[in-house]
Image 1 (cartoon, rainbow, N blue to C red):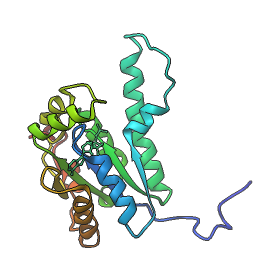
Image 2 (cartoon, rainbow, N blue to C red; image 1 turned 90 degrees about the horizontal axis):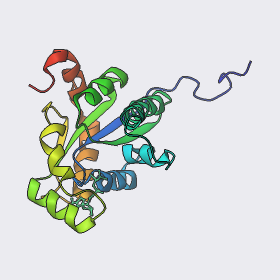
Image 3 (cartoon, rainbow, N blue to C red; image 1 turned 30 degrees about the vertical axis):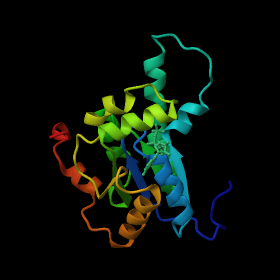
Length: 198
Ligand SMILES: Nc1ncnc2c1ncn2[C@@H]1O[C@H](COP(=O)(O)OP(=O)(O)OP(=O)(O)O)[C@@H](O)[C@H]1O
């Protein structure tokens, strides 16, 4: 049987997960790109969009679609957890617009290794960006706005209407070596499971 025994690091310590949460068009991917450019350690950018893009393009029936989407999100959470468990640092780029997604991530990720980042952007600017880019359904970001930040707890927050992606990435990078505990994920796990959005 083959094992990892000959490998220089057979039992790696889990990687750090920089978890960017915000609405569509809030600027998550732009920050992730800057983070990968500027962070000293190797990181993988794993956006949820990339997992949807991997799926077959074939039309699905209205009955099938909700299950397929749900399983894609579940699989995405487990893929990120798996990469981190393998010793890889990850920039997660996700939209927590349904409470179960946060609960699932809280169950799967090592809470002290997660840097939970709130990527905020006001309504008017979201609408402007959506109009300008033209590749997202109009109104999508605003519909998500009240939902994604409902749990209200982060390690770091950025307002992308005030700071460009480079400045947001610098803020996160500077936060990394001085992370206080308990982390946001540790605090959220301690909250009563039924009271996440209070
Ligand atoms: N800090 C910023 N200041 C100004 N414009 C920005 C900023 N961040 C992103 N943008 C612009 O907003 C648009 C959306 O950015 P981006 O793709 O990074 O958002 P996103 O949150 O990843 O969106 P989605 O989830 O829909 O993929 C892009 O046109 C981008 O150039």
